[in-house]
Image (tube, rainbow, N blue to C red):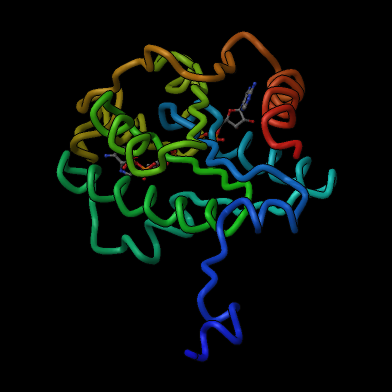
Length: 198
Ligand SMILES: Nc1ncnc2c1ncn2[C@@H]1O[C@H](COP(=O)(O)OS(=O)(=O)O)[C@@H](OP(=O)(O)O)[C@H]1O
Ligand SMILES: Nc1ncnc2c1ncn2[C@@H]1O[C@H](COP(=O)(O)OP(=O)(O)O)[C@@H](O)[C@H]1O
């Protein structure tokens, strides 16, 4: 008789649902899409804090920990953006399969890029469109990037000199141009909590 028959744990592959049970939550990937300055990072951080307070185990993935780390060799050409999102989606899937509620904040500018992310992640992909027109994002110009892009100092800038396809069928849409931060945050938390309760 083989060792595996005596000690079945050597042969057992734990599933996502075993981990979800342990954490008492449903694991999903919340994929936040929107222009620079639309409010993705602000809402992603606020959402993560609220979920944490409610006892959910979370992980946030964004430019700060992905573009400076695993993707520090990538820029903003269409090919590099695709590779950026491919690696981010694969990373998000690993966290999701470990049972975590994973929040991703990337511009994800085109239909094709989002289709790829959705295909990689599969069941559990929840698309959130952080809806804010370029005029309002430009007015905010949180990092001064739109001004630089208009002067031609940043090439291929999304919404100015590179494309952004408005998502056609997001699972959740948050209008940050006509709503305050608090209202957008509450709306988002409500939409997500009902998807992650075990
Ligand atoms: N050319 C160009 N176009 C758009 N954005 C630019 C560019 N160059 C630098 N940045 C800064 O990079 C942030 C976007 O990175 P992402 O990884 O989210 O982009 S993408 O999904 O791969 O398109 C984005 O951050 P956010 O403002 O948080 O969206 C910008 O600060
Ligand atoms: N309803 C809202 N939701 C999110 N952010 C908002 C909202 N209204 C105004 N803002 C402001 O818009 C800016 C969004 O910046 P940021 O979160 O860095 O965007 P992004 O990560 O998409 O580039 C912040 O200064 C934020 O305070």
